[in-house]
Length: 344
Image 1 (cartoon, rainbow, N blue to C red):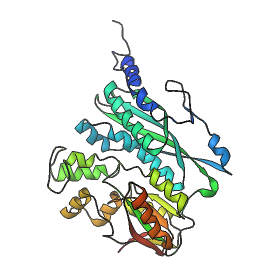
Image 2 (tube, one colour):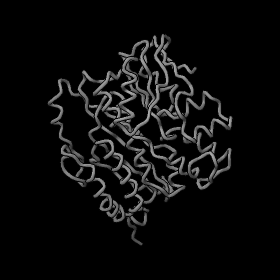
Image 3 (cartoon, rainbow, N blue to C red):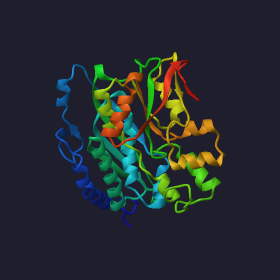
Image 4 (tube, rainbow, N blue to C red):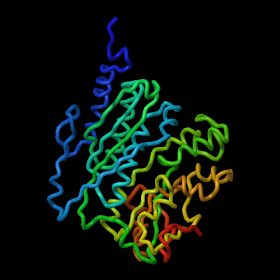
């Protein structure tokens, strides 16, 4: 008896078919900087834009989607997690003022389904288009034995460009500055182990359950894609004195905002100063998770924090309301302290 790779669980032909199905989505992200096309051994990008900068700096970010993928697999909905994958990296890049240039993805699965891979990459491509970056490469790895037949994991990597003099690192954050929160639409891509524990184990719901407090099913609430803040943040940094930017991911406000605070200043957050998404209001109302745990595990409705001079806060808020698709609230201020977040 002769053995083949297909007998071992790896179908090269199906993988090739997946590449053909995703080509159109990938090409839709291309801009003038892209060199070559899908199918080469590496992706190329022209850095001529760096010539206009005094000290061009490349910044890189990488991340995954975490156990939110389990919800996608339960619902058999696979495009939105592609958006999440892009958002997790590009939302990090913009925190230091970088413009995302290009993105690469990695999909590992127990069995390649060309149509499923197409959906995932279509989501990745949508995230790239909305972020103004090009999808210049990726990898689909079929690994039977390591993953179940319908299981997969995602990882992504993004590169951005910034002039060194315009990098934002929080060093200019000062006493009295205003703290502005860009609203989230839900969990984004963090805290899903706790969210699944709450909804599926503690409450006994499934993805099709409907409860009065949520807009849609439990699964739909959990699968809302991460918001992409690239256009809004880049526009703001070009117009205003943005002194610090923090992406509110794992660790919530408690862990992420201190990353951009000087050691002698605190971020004082006024609870109730923004409208929480329905999922957070519901979880909070149940009273089974301590408040500190909520604000450490989830974003609680604040997806991105911007720190600006107090005298620019009103203009920043007006710009967000009039010129962007995002919503925001002034959620606090910078006060003397020890480099932590306080809630009042």
